[in-house]
Image (cartoon, rainbow, N blue to C red; front, side, top):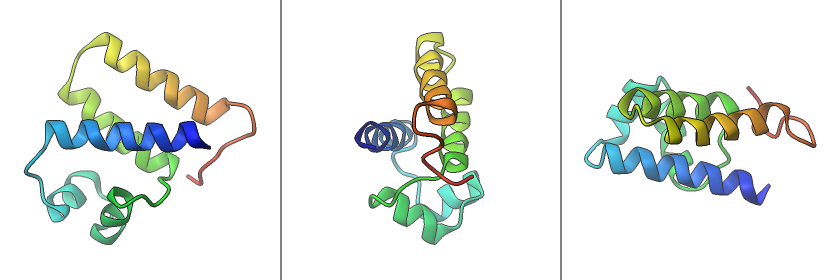
Length: 90
């Protein structure tokens, strides 16, 4: 579970690096995730797999670096099919 929290922190940090001035309302509009939920995610609440995929896809479109994409593809593969089953609800 610790690794999953690390990945969540990593993807949200990367998002903030690419979109440093974005408000919660703008993030909500961009992701389709409610503004309250976005606030909770950035304050440590556990992210659902679908939410991770939304942020991942936004970053994938922003950054075409194959190494970067491979890292997140590995994260998603582990989250979907890793040991112990699916950690988050869809």
